[in-house]
Image (spheres, rainbow, N blue to C red):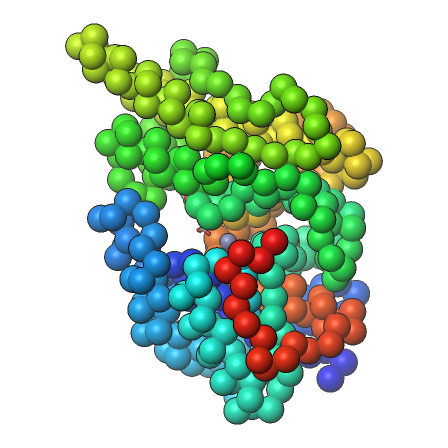
Length: 340
Ligand code: KG4
Ligand code: ZN
């Protein structure tokens, strides 16, 4: 059909997502359904996502989530089924991919294997329309990527990624050091509001060197926070937790936004797109806005529900690829947990 209805299935981490969109032409999409079941609460007591628990939760949630999405969209079947093929947790990916293949075969509609990271970028077109050439900054518990997107339907170039911890992961680890709950990002964000972000200055990893890549490092920062906390405890002094949270958050937001804007300038691109769960961070958003404005750039941030993992983002990228004439994937396509 001219305006295909595209389904996206997501199961790369701890969210089971089924989203449905309609291609309405010229790079614009209409949202028909966005159903997500999360197993985040089951991982909380472990302080991080437990792969086996995530896989089992996907198995239980997949069919009910699918039924809810079809009902919300008011359709019996879509015109195409798209699914996250990678990157992600191997066992978790398998559940979504097996479901997508089964539904595509049963409905006799084409099947498309989709890169999860591209989905985080493409989802922005739902809210802000056609996407100009841009730099995208993806930050979540699983990823920290700086990408160059010339055309959302074409291959995306990776400009840099983390050499150790993901940004959201650093938030989770620092939250644990400060005795806060999981996921740590929202807790650190809240506590930081009561602190002074200049009281404790933490190191900004990999900001000095100007090599061709735009990579990040957050493990040194995490260690610096741990040392600071330990030194206070050893000296028998109270840990100024709000100041530590604010100083840590400032270091992360500073590095991310500085490098994103620098990469965009290097490429002569004037749009920055944010994606991933950690874009909910208030200081990251604030600094991104400030620095984009100062550099004469446009900042595009999808609403929070679309920034965290969901099926809509997979449907969105699929719709762009289908509109661009991409061939369907083989039903034998294998999951690729380490997909670049
Ligand atoms: O995209 P997401 O829901 O799941 C994946 O990891 O793929 O992102 C979750 C991550 C967690 O690490 C969480 O701590 C972080 O995003 N996060 C935040 C905030 N809200 C969520 N990090 C910093 N500030 C926040 N407000
Ligand atoms: Zn993600």
